[in-house]
Amino acid sequence: MSFTAKDVQALRQATGAGMMDAKKALEANDGDMEAAKQWLREKGLAASAKRDDRENTEGVVALVIDGNVGAMVKLKSETDFVAGSDQFKAEADTLARLVIAKGEAAVAERAEQLEDLRIVLKEKIELGEVVRVEAGPGEVIDSYLHLQGGRGVNGVLVVMADATQELAHDIAVHIAFARPKYLSKADVPDDALTVPSIISVFVGANWHEREVAEMYGIDFAGHPDPRKLYLPTEFEGYPLRKDFPLLARRIKPWPGIVDVEQMPGDDEPEEAAAEG
Image (tube, rainbow, N blue to C red; front, side):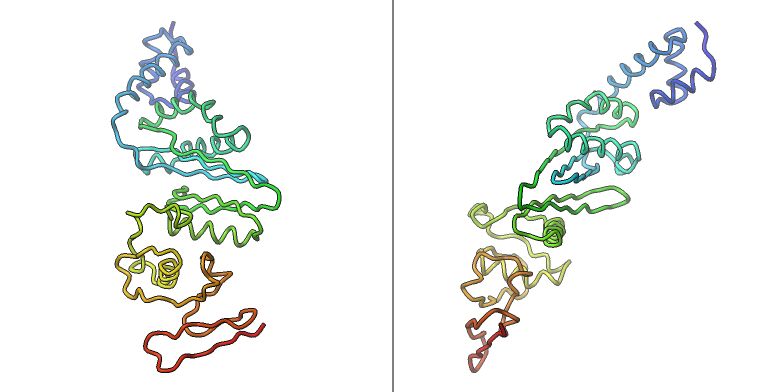
């Protein structure tokens, strides 16, 4: 069976194969279009298997919120060039929307499409983390997706009770920046109570690190000024700066009078009161 240049073009469009590969496929299958597609697929899968030992540390994070449900999917690739391609990003977005609709296990429905993506893009492409969260009654859901080169590289989903949308978003942004490993001190193993300070890259972390050190006993290696804040005992267990302003010597607006310990170096203790 003969074939024409239009047949080669049609096969390329259907499979994403290069011109020479499409021509070879048609020649090997006497111009049979469907047989040529299967031939290309088998050849592509064989080539994909040879890439299994390669590292795929690049990729994209797709994040979708629909109503009270949020989903994130990480799709991994070998290079940022592939990770930033429209076809790759579209597949990640499709997977995230599928997780929204059907749950985390639904990504298995796209196994064949992922195989085709490996063949067309000629890289080791794999699914990474898949997450689905749902906000219940009285809860809010929000997110933050950090973009780099037009693709998502760091995503956060937050579900909170008794909170505003703005607060949930602010916390998502903070998590994306700080990348905390633990939710509370109880989650931190005894041998992990020391973490590197990030003041060298973000000066504003000074107060945050001192607050965490005093409230939770976590040391920040490299912190230039680890002195205590001398917070009132009522602050214990409340790390949200927005709700509980950090104090050193003066009390900021506060409903009542709070005693603050004298700071080191003060000659006389200072008493501060807040207007209710």
